[in-house]
Amino acid sequence: MSGTAVIFAVLAAVVLLGAWRVVTSEQIAHSALFLGLTFVGMAGLFILLKAPTFALLHVLVYVGAILTVVVFAIMLSDPEELRGAGDLPLGERLRRRFLSPYYGWLPVVVAGVLVAVVLAGLAAAQLPRVPLGEPVADDLRAIGGEMFTRYAIPFEVASAALLAALIGAIGLTRRETAEERGRAGRDGGAARTAPVARVPGAMAAQGAGDGAPQVGTPAGSSPAGDRVTAAAGSSGGAGAAGEVGR
Amino acid sequence: MPEWLVAVLWAILKATIALAFIGVNFMFLVWLERKVSARMQYRVGPYRVGKPHGWAQLFADAIKMFSKEDVMPAAADRWVWAAAPVVVFAPAVLLFVILPVGPGFGVQPDFNLGLLFLSAVSSFTLFGIFMAGWGSNNKYSLIGAMRAAAQLMAYEIPLVLAVLGVVMLAGSLSLQDIVEAQKRYWFVFPQFLGFIVFLIAAIAELNRTPFDLSEAESELVAGYFTEYSGIRWGMFMFAEYTNLFTMSAIAASLFFGGWNGPILPPVVWFLIKTYAFVLLAMWIRWTLPRIRIDQLLDLGWKFLVPVGLLNLVITGLFLV
Image (cartoon, rainbow over all chains, first blue to last red; front, top):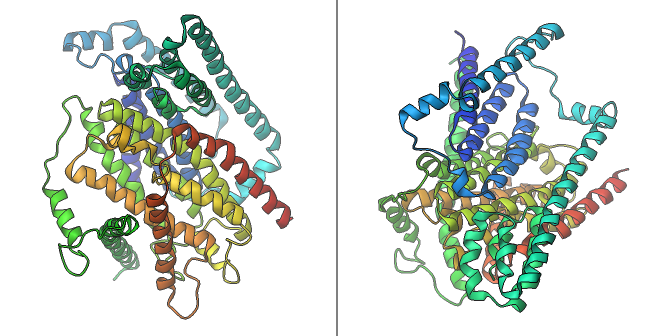
């Protein structure tokens, strides 16, 4: 076995093991971390194919952007739900893995069907075969040029779709905030800090909750609270939640 | 000797020199930070251990750090907690690969995707911070990590926008080419707006005061590394000071002509400019108070991003 083949085997094993652990981890935080490991392995495969641009772009987009948002969402969620059922007895774990439809055989069947579809598609597409270690088209300048000429319209459509998703996310957060604020108005000033703090996530509320009872004055808390919640909507101000209690 | 063996040995030699420099630089910067902060607060700073001016203090610090007990919280997520310092530390060291120390001198300064490498590798830092904050199973750590995530997301974009202006002028992503392109004039003059954005965003990326909300000791104990002690804590510090040096070196290379300069050898110019930025960062840290998190995010999204975009538009207009 040549050196390249050994490296390929190691990277492939990293990718497959990582991907397997993404779906089997009991804790979603672990799933996110194994997803990162999978991405790193994929980047390694791109480097092995002599395509460093794709490797770096892969890391930049998937680790730097997508995984960051995933991690962010995890940190904003309720930790009690997320820590998961880590310490199940062995019998229960085995039953889950092999017998129960949700954790056991149903995902296997779905994954099998998907793999079959992908393999069938690959067989039908007859992709050109590039030998391992042979350089592929990998030039940032060329990629940029293509993106702004031949693929300008798909590029713009994708941007518009992402922008719509962004605005939608902000809109969803904002509506929730407005409702909470209306309820807080009926309850009176003293209760104000708590609902505002609950919006961005329960974990942040723990920290904010420590400060809230001591502060408690409506005059001091409401303007800051409103602004902070707006920031949480627009830029995912996780840290902002920690400040609500002030 | 076969050719590949020479290449491998050469690479090992260069990496060893870089690693040795990183270690020495870390100890020097810690000592320097203590001395600078003392000066700014009308104190003397480390003085007793080693004359003159407590130069041996850093060895005392290092011995203390190594001999401290390694305490793991009982409720910690063991593997995630233990791996976090390494994940924070590794990208800091990796970034040394692209630094141009002199003409054709450095670990791999003519890497034609240098700045892409910079942003790709530095995205792992956030990952490590998340692992530390989550793995500690401590609310202060988690809030610190969340702040770090919000902050790094908000400031990564203006940082890249500021760098892009320079890339447009130089027409290359390689730091070596960018420094070569500044033989006649420094890019700080045509890119002054970009430089301001870069400076603010870089200090925020480094998590230094006035932007160190993720480790604000007055409210979060020590933020995401509250639960770390001994050498693991040391690795976070190591990464922080190494990143400070790397970011300063990148600022010097992008905007102040890197190793270009008269009379003195290029390496000396590189070090002078880099340490000037290090001193500037320390000066800012010990002068300005910490800002609030909502001010921080406002500054990032509502000021730096628009200014960065404006700078790109102006640069583009001039180039056309």
